[in-house]
Image (tube, rainbow, N blue to C red; front, side, top):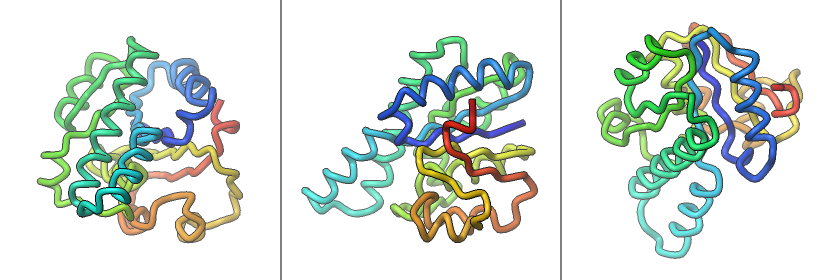
Length: 185
């Protein structure tokens, strides 16, 4: 199984459609779970938190809702892909078809004790999901230019991946790739 995290910034580009088409074409017959970034919806949460000064727990829960909105958007574009809200639902859907879009459930993430912080975004949540599902590979698709010679720690320092990601993959048994969207299709 492969977990593919599509960066939220792809929602500002036609690259999002190209990435979804690539999944449909190149991963046919393989078990794939797509993790959406929060995109424009998460950006609105950041702005609202700046304006209203609410706590990080509230912002984190709202950011999860932004991932759910992106999941709905992706499913609207690719209605043949299944939509799943929990790990158990993902497993059930993967038995029926190969491609699932994760719409993360706040309660499940809170039960897993995922810290509520902007240091933990959809990147880290994709890593958590890959671990829980025993994925063989995690691919993070970004709009940023990617230097393949850089380490994950360097990507985190450059804000290409979130600050919590390295902790989530410290003992990962799966392969990790961070790639630019142009290298995905």
